[in-house]
Length: 257
Image 1 (cartoon, rainbow, N blue to C red):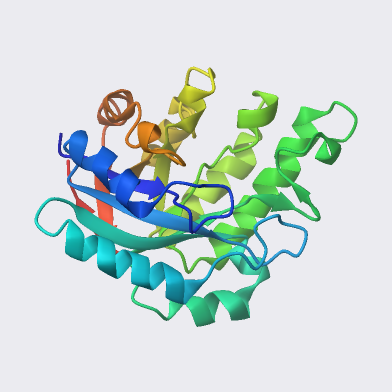
Image 2 (tube, one colour):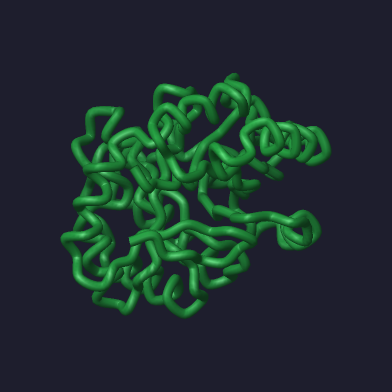
């Protein structure tokens, strides 16, 4: 299958234990064209991944793995930077390297992880989503990254509530303005949610806003999850006029479909 998994993690992320090699072998078994390792980069001291990422060690692993699987699989060097707009100096310094792709994501709200129950105001999910999407809006307005990761992330942990579509539409407009791709993250399907992140309604709104650039990401932390449910994600995307699935190389979007 001519898929590129644009969101995966290895032992170079704090929350993953798999080697680059094991992830690549899974990608080859599944006949992928390429895989992007998008390791967590976290600068919030309250984040459990704070100060974990080691750029030089990661580069050595990428280089050796590329050499080993040359001609069999394209291996892309990426990172998933948490809340980049809150750490502009660190982001600008790190982004100067020879990256293929940078994902921007919201993982922390203040001192708490998005999935921590303590961030909810009593049981008001509507308030949680409003606060979360406001952070996503600030991040997309700031820009500087290539892909918006798991746009409606809190639903992995708390389920869905009435989304603030006024905020969501503003975010989608900023994606178009800043030429940032929208990720279809398939991990919620593995958690029994029955849909990707974002859902089909947000994807339709993205297309109506003039958005075209879409990437597929498994958010795999183990080899078995590489490219999981990509056939379903691809079908969802292709059913919406105007959307184009692609991947990034040297931080440039390349259309695949």
